Length: 308
Image (cartoon, rainbow, N blue to C red; front, side):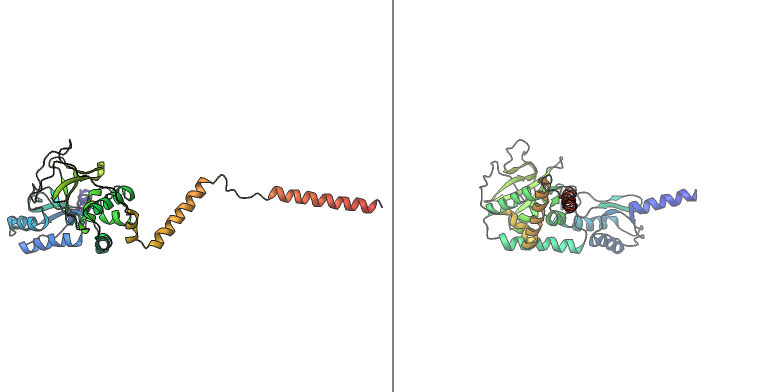
């Protein structure tokens, strides 16, 4: 029986981050702040004593780690860069405060590099018009970013892959001083971007190539948004611009490094395409012919010598 009890305790420790019992509101708040400061994705059970006022804890949690209203469905990239903000209060069971946290940036180094990229992006492209900025971002993500299982903004920027492209869209547009938000359609879970151009709001659904559409599109009925956002009824005609979106990668790596990588890739492709043509020379038949000819010459010379 003891053996099974130990296994059960071990499983609980693996599943949840086990903490000491919080004896006061201050202890409980410190535990919560430590979780979000350390940015460790995990499931958490915070056990508390009867001296803790859980109403005050919920109030603190809401003001610091939740959306201001569970009905608001519009986010900024700051809501994603560290953690997904909560819609509902953590569960309370038998003096335990239970919630799951999934962070999109795991450490200070990733956090600082993401911010560094945003600053470089602003420094290089902030002179463009708003239309040009949107065109640049959309084409960069559609052509240079690969869809993957990653939810990390760091992976999107420095490894070129992410599952949720709308996060990268919003991050880049924000750093280019384009007012934009991530929005989630209520009761559906579908997410896309809202972009403000010429004082009107448009839907940017990069996953489905719907660029700056109005809510008259079949899937986009008028929705409830925060900040008094009302999406235009009409589509926005984004022009074509002569902008090299590939240069964005030079903000991540020096130009020389990127070009060297391209040369290496090109060389490999050429080798693969012409591998049937590029063969190692087999010298064995040549050597055999040389030996045969030399042998014949020697035989001829010997015969001539003895037939004089």
